[in-house]
Image (cartoon, rainbow, N blue to C red; front, side, top):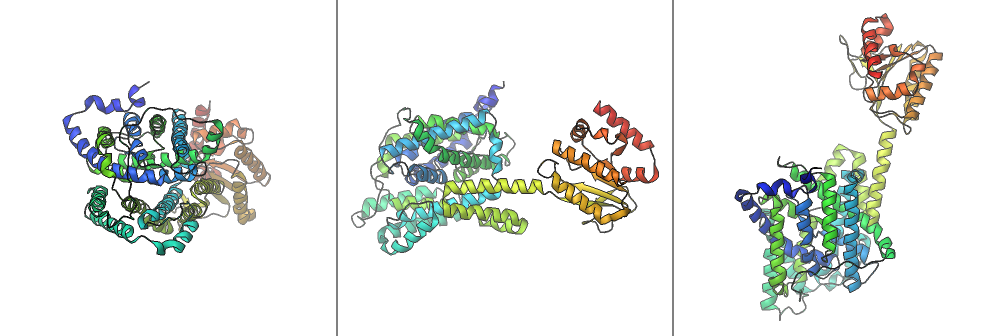
Length: 575
């Protein structure tokens, strides 16, 4: 076993030097400055006291720096996972209560355990069933829900919190006129500042700027704005080691939301990791190792009062842009959070909650991917409607059901596409030995007595009837003139027993009609399945050809020289 693959920090730490540290130091400080106010804000989304957002930025980052295969992904609290936590846990306990906090921490342990087990057993491929259109629709819907939920803090109105957009919009419509003037002014000024400076340079710590602005405003003008809600006391000190309390009934109730967090968290991490991987050639992201790292981050983090965490799109991008080269940048961010927890939490006493809402709203609305929707509309209508269906179902039915609908639709489309793949008749290109799609190459020669049929997918139980019906339909159009069928099997990469039996039955059927049935371009593994399935009991090796033209020429001229050489080759390969 290669220990460096199991513990990726050993790949870069032994060769660490000052030049790497310079970039990591700048990136770690930059991300830490952004992470601290974001952590406080995201904890409020999750329905937890602000301090738990900072707890979430400690141990999970350390574990990922040790075990993560990406050296630039930033782990910690994120808006999407925080809202999913709030959605799931709020049905079991009152937000902010001791019971609520303990359940949120238990959820992190459960999520981490599932991720770790999936990583150990190399089950990362399961998440591939969520296609990119589903991810785009889901993340865009969740971003919109998160943003609307923050209007309560932005405007100072006690709107309901929900993951169903129609309930949110209805309540906002009924109560928006009750907005708190001072709260709204501070919030909108903060949004303007963030947007303004982000357009100048995304590296500018806009979150820190508005936090300082809000604290100073309330510190010196708080008496005039007494009705503006502030964070108040954030306890100092590091989290204690504590094993989460749980029972089996509670785990059963948390399982659906835990599986949602596993899927979403892993997808976020892999998509971010792969995008950062493409910008360098120092390392490669390993999906199953990412699951192990995320699992350990959440499991060990839960022992130190962290709720579920994953990678952040914005902080990871800033980490890379600021010059991070290794996981040392994450460890530097952890040091900044530790310093904050030990000495600086009193500074956040006067921080207005509307400032945190402004930070969240600007961050999450950037995740609403309109460009991808426009691209899919032009490129692939089916993928566009898949994205829209996921988007609308998440908005209307909630986050948990949205992800279920997305996965379900992805599987349905996968089954549809594999059960009804592309097929066509091939014709001969004039003055050549090549056969091409008659629908794309209008000049090809189509002969009345020859049908060259191409099937562009694996041939198995789900599409064998589709293959047979369309082959028969093409053969019927040829009529009594048809004397030869050539199956161009170059695009068939696998065949199961149902497919083999169907082919055997078709060969017998056309043999009775005095129509020869030849095979061209059959791959070795497919040929093995055909032979083991008993096809050679019906036809012999002379019915197999390397190319379509060889089959047609052999049928028309009886030229055996080339065919006998190929049949001999197949015989040697098979035996």
